Image 1 (cartoon, rainbow, N blue to C red):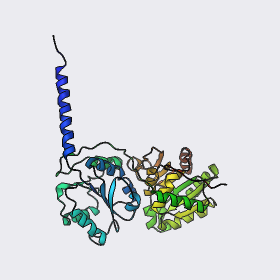
Image 2: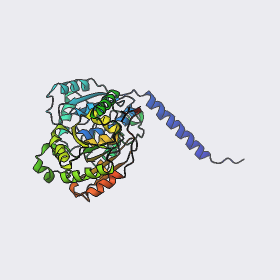
Image 3: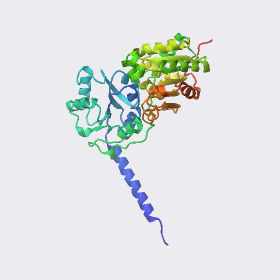
Image 4: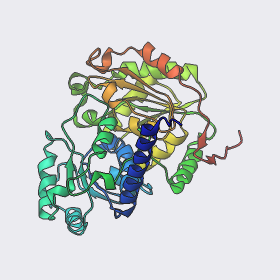
Amino acid sequence: MIRTFKAPLIADSIAVQTAQVSFAAAAAAPALRPIVIRFGRVGDMVMLSPLLSLLRRRYRMPCWLVGAGPWSTQLYRGHDDIEQIWSLGGRHTPLLLGPTWWRVLWALRHSGKSPVYVCESAPSRRLNRIKGLLMLAGVAPERCVFLPEEDTEHRIDGLLRFGKQTPSALQAAHYPWEEVNPAPRLMALDQDRLDCDAWIRAQGWSGRPLILVQPGNRRSMRQYPWQRGRFDAKAWSISKWAKLLRRVHESLPEAQIVLCGSPQERTLLRQIRDVTELNDAVALNLSLCRLLALCEIAHSMISVDTGPAHVAAAMGAPLVVLFGNGSPSQFLPRSFCGAPVIGLGGAPRVRHVDEISVQSVFEAWHSLPTRSNRLAGLQLAQTPA
């Protein structure tokens, strides 16, 4: 009797045995706590979320995150991918100036064999400070992986590819990686949700659709009003914002329009509100915690290419983003739950956001699906009319 297909059977058996050996090696390897260092702004830190998820699953322990500015702690409080967050005084704070630097130095010195992922590319001026910190902490270079120079792919895809690299001190077979959702996942704490609900009631907005508008960005916070449009490629003119908000109000008159921004953007927000001349438009300075909770229930957001747009997408808000000379293929916000995110403009076709028409923004916003006034898993109580 002639037997056939022996070779494939043997090959399959070898593959199974190899997989079993690899699985056993991975199971025997000790769990490690990955350390992620990124001195980024709000949007940069939001886009780290998929990388943190990948590293937590790969090394079987939640991450330590070293960031700059207060926003890292506000964004990732209670997040299951992170065990500890250190927020340094600022993105450009000199090395070892301030108590947090010394706490980070002590933690790194006692971090054992944990892998260190430095998410600053070679051209970054912050990279020298990070290397100095690692040297003072006695972290061996073999434990570290450094982000390569930025490519043309989406920033999140580049970070995930980076997370699949392995420090030379470790064996890649011992820490296999698995694919994760390539969209950021943030969460609002229950107390922030309850506080937000109470705040909405106090404003008299219960039951009304909330449309968030983010007209400013980091450049608008640094410039005088007469410089804003000239030097800021993300600055849409005040007259265009006013025309758009009037169109939005005509389309959805029951909605409350909320102009969002930081304290430094207060003047810009008030100028837009005053020119709009709508009673149903307000200008507010929102903390990140309040913004997270609002984005979770908002009808939609209209924003320039800036950090709060990434927050809104991560919290599931339908979103329209206006791009100036940035590229949507690299920076378009991503929604973890699949909510629509529409990007308009951007390089190479558009070099300044003011080239985008009011009509195109309105049509994009109008195409967004209706979203119910609901917190994640918690129905907001409605105030009787």
